[in-house]
Image (tube, rainbow, N blue to C red; front, side):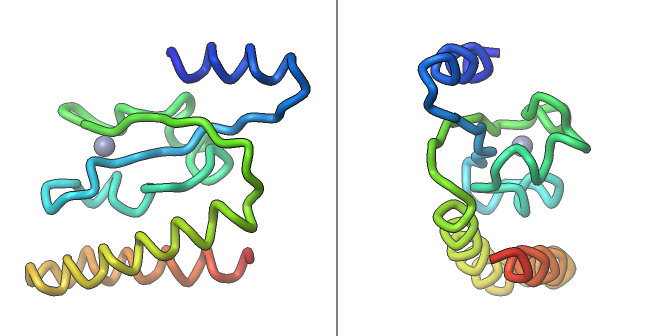
Length: 110
Ligand SMILES: [Zn+2]
């Protein structure tokens, strides 16, 4: 995977890069991937290994960051809160609830 190769190369320079899961961040993003948007690999590698695709037809991608969790997680939470609003507007209450639970878990870590 391209992001994995770039990560390995950058890590040899002493810059510790981590992979970040990115979704298309629109109303078609599924309930599997939606809560993963913006999260560093420690949050999803146990379940998804090297990352996307999370399921057939998955449009997700990886990006790299050198930033710590104290920067990455608040950013992910902010985007997750925007997603809750969107899901509520669409009437997807169950998905909104799952996303709220994920936000609560993330908040405990920062
Ligand atoms: Zn996906």
